[in-house]
Image 1 (cartoon, rainbow, N blue to C red):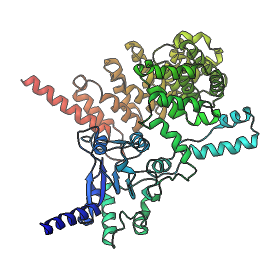
Image 2: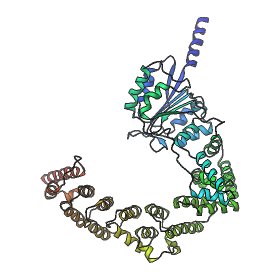
Image 3: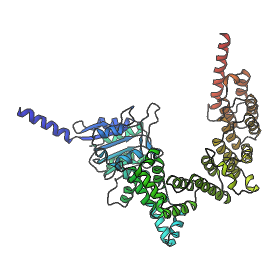
Image 4: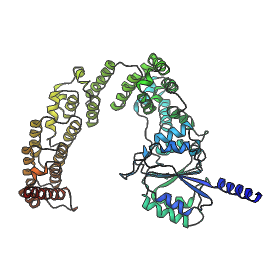
Length: 553
């Protein structure tokens, strides 16, 4: 019995000494399997945290009290918002916001707090490029609040450094106190390429895994693929205070009312710093449900913010001075959400913003996109009279497009003319407008197609044809106009754009032997092999076969 007890105790100690490698596999399994094959089973155990088909797999791992020594994450990370898969059958992903919630809430301490090493196999996971920087209105705001120009410039630089939130910064904040975080500063190798590199690493000597020290051998092998290393943020680091602020938005232990108290305190700071927190404030205040807003605690905090006239005035003054209309519009939205603006006042502020932009004679396609988006529901159309626009301005395509977004019939007609313009910039503006306001009138669309078909072959015509492709043309007259253009054009790009329209049309109506012969006879030679024209021909031929079979039946 004594021997059995000693054996059991020994076995328990061996298991206790094992290091746990946690894996989050949302895309390639290659990296995980190389680790599993090469690490001795008596020293390492593996736990896959992703449970296929279960959306709350991370919370499930937390409830199981999994404690990780090493964490290996594999997934695409191109835009820096989440690890995701390129496989259609895989729906699991790992949003950075969820990682921040877990790290800030301390609701799952075993997963992150005991880590010695993290391996982030995804593009740009440790990219140091700032996601946000200060702009000119930041310095202007600091000067208005009493700082000298030199101090304003210095403080602006400090704010940029503190609020940069590069991918590297965010990973350091999430994996606080972790000694070693491996990742990639730019493009990372896919699993099929990363796997063999890892194999060479394991075969080149004793693996340096789980000891909390960066491996020069591993970094050397992955150096051509931009692998780099960082350490998790520590309480003594300059960014520690900023992490504490950011965690106020994510910490599950804080009630909505407590988070709003923090937002109110934040709004009392230098408005230049408030601007740098705009993403977080906007996201949190916008996430409050109607049910939450009606609770007494949340309602009281919102009332306290709404009554803060000083913060309101400073916030709106800053918003009106913003260099980017999109930022100004977002700040106006926040002001509405915290009770500083009624709906009517919000509309007036937005129209004032649009009027200011039109007055600067610097309207671009981004402004058109913003104006159409802001008037998605047509609520600003009633405010069109507020704009002071001269006839010369209204004749410009960009200005006309903004007016069209706000309900102007004259502006709409001017933009439709611009789609057939020889100027590519004008066509691009029309394309942006029509993305928001598709043509519904069949005769209007027919006339527009005819004008586009008579453009001289150019990049502008290709862009205009690609815009028409989204309409899935079914009008026979329009389709015949494009079929006539195909043999006349001297541009293979125009021919491909025509094919892009025809391939979305009614095949049964188009599937005629004479059309297929014309496509084969007049198609221009392409230097890059088969293209959309070949796909169109094959599909038309298949449609003709189906028609023949139906006729025989």
